[in-house]
Every structure is written in C-alpha cells, then in structure tokens.
Length: 474
Image (cartoon, rainbow, N blue to C red; front, side):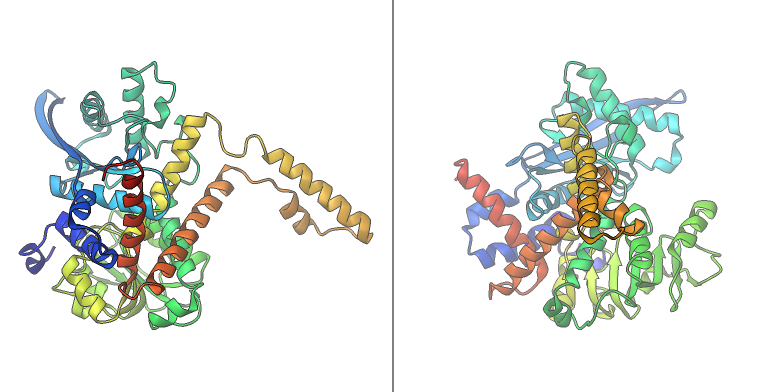
C-alpha cells in the first residue's frame, strides 16, 4: 500500500468505503449498513510448536464476518504479511463474494503469520495440524459452521492435514471431509478445484465480451482474440487465467509481473514455457524469449487492453493510479486496487471488474466440493451412463431416419456423458455468467450506480439484508 493510502485507510476500511457507495445508492439506514459491515467475531491464537528441538510460538487468526448463511467460508493463508485487519477485510469480501454468486455461505477468513519457505514439509505439517487444533477446539472450524480453503501459501497438502486433524478430533462426524475444501481428489476433493479461481476469472472476462455495450463503454471492441493483456502474478490464479486466455481465447499476454521483476514481449509470451522456467529456476530472470526488468511494478503501467492483477492486495494505489494505461482492469486478486486508487480510476473512466465478483470461482467450486462431501457421492455417478445410452438412442434414430451414418466426431460428442470435471466447469461457467448478467443489469438500471464495483456490492447487500430481514434480525 502506498504512503498516501496508508495515511488514510486500512485494508478493511478500504473495503468498507467501497461498500458505502452501495449503501448510499440503496439509501439504506446507517444502522443496518453498520450491522452488515461489522465483523461478527475474530479469534487470535498463539501456540508453541517444537521445531527440531527449539520451541517457536506462532500467531494466527480466524475471522467470521457474517454467519447469515452457514457455514461461513473462506481460505487460510500462510504469509508474513498476515495480520488481523487483513483477515477481517478478506472475511468481509468473502461475505459479499458469496452473495454475488449465490453461494449460500457466510464470509470468513484465516491466516497464520509465517514464512512457509523457512520450514520443511515435516515442520509445516506440525505447525498446520497444531493451528487446526486451535481453531477446531475453539469452534472456528467444522463442516457445519466454518469451512476453510486454500489461499496464499497453502494448498491441497495443508487442507488434507487439516481435514485429517478434524477427523481425529471428531471421529463421530460422518461429514468430516466437509470441514475444508480444496483437498486432494483422493481425500474428498473435487476435480477442477485447483484451477477454479483462474478459470472463473476467464469466464468473467468472456461474459464481459458477450455484452457489446459494456465493451464499448470500456473503450474496447470485438472479442478477446488479439487483446493485449498484462498479468501480475503467475501463481495458481494467474497461471490458469493466463494459460486459458492464451491457448483458448487467442489473447496476447504481453507482460508477466512477478516478485523479482517482469517479463515483457509485445508479440506475446508462451505461458507454459514461462511457468516451466519458474518451476526450474525459481525466478523469471533469464527467461530467453522476453525482455526482463527488475522494476516489476512498472509493468503495471504498460499500455494494454486488459490488466489483471492476480497477486497481492494494494498493488494499484493513489501513487500509480494516474499512470495506469489500460481500458479494463480485472481484479483476480483480493483488493489489488485501493479505495483511493479506485476513486482516481473511476474518474478517468477506467472499467474495473471487481474482485468480489471476478475471483469468486474458487468459492463456487468449493461449494460444489462441500456439497459433494455432504452427499457422499461424486457428481455424475448416477446419470452419466444413462445420458450416454440416451445419446446412443438419438444417434440410432438419426441414422434410421436419414439412412446416413453419423460422423464419428459427432457421434462421440452426442454419446459422451458428462463426467465430474465437465459438470464442475459447467456449473462454474453458469455461475459466473449469471452473476455478471445480474451485475450488468443492476449497473444499467440504477442511475445512482456508476461502476461495476458498486453494482456488485448493491447485488450482495440486497441479498444479505433480505436474509437478515427474513429471520427478524432487524
């Protein structure tokens, strides 16, 4: 966060100020607005772990912003930047995010103040399991009330450890697999979860380009093909988003920004080659088919059609917002644009697809995984072969009526029944499309709403306030 932004707003305050625009557009009672914005509860835990004969004390948090729907949902991040304000801000974003995409969860978030790179696998298992025990015993982790997922610094491995810890403490809970999402498939996870957030980003962009009026307002034209894209962060989210945009949509990724600098190639970068280089060398420096600059943040200011910040919060601030040269910002990370920067960009007419919508793919597929865990059956198990048989009957009827043989490619497409991954991707695509359509309709049908972020918060707050009203909270 820039010095100018630090002087004014914290991360949680920035989120609340963005939500305030929606409350004003809705002319909502200030008391109700404050009730919706307030974080319900936050726990801080401090616990010792014996690391190779030395006792180290770790600090972690878990915040529940809203439990108007249960369970409350949100990732756990392991990072050196974690603090209580960040966790509470991310928890509030989760509340709005779930409401926007009609996922029936409340908002939560967790974090552990740690640098995972300093510890080996065995150490991380000890630390993760101990953190999980603290949260479980204090009622901040269960399949019924609070369900974590992977975030920065965590992944399938950590989720498997947490799930196993919960099972050991609650062997009587037959739904124990539902206590976390983002698990390995062999341990109750769901196919498509790893790529879900990045794929959701792409589905959001594709839906944007299906709305010509919105595209024109952003100063763009046509479709995704050939669009020049700068992406910050080639982690899990950025990698899958960039790879799909390059390989399936024929977009041109002209710059990739990482922590050690940026790669720039006006002709487009080969995403898979860059990813393999990073995996091998642990840096982007030295990659042959691009120009390298150590000042990675400067690449945010490159002229491009689409800028996708997919790394950390507060990357576009009051200090650099005036120098951003893009038509469309797609917030794949949480809170990459500060409130002060958002004000500047809005005044300049830059279109921003907000984080609370764009990166909701992860929680959407987490919802699918949670449902799968509670139903104890994989998607498609009961109907797949029936669908294949019905497709075969259709082929037979077509051939009988036309006295012609259906081509093999057509036969294969019609006969094939959907597997779990097909259904997950279909459900994610449908969710992101429907949510965008609701945002766009809200934006265009209310004179008090001027941007997609405010429209997103209006959609979310309407749903949350209706929920509170229905149960008699106010």
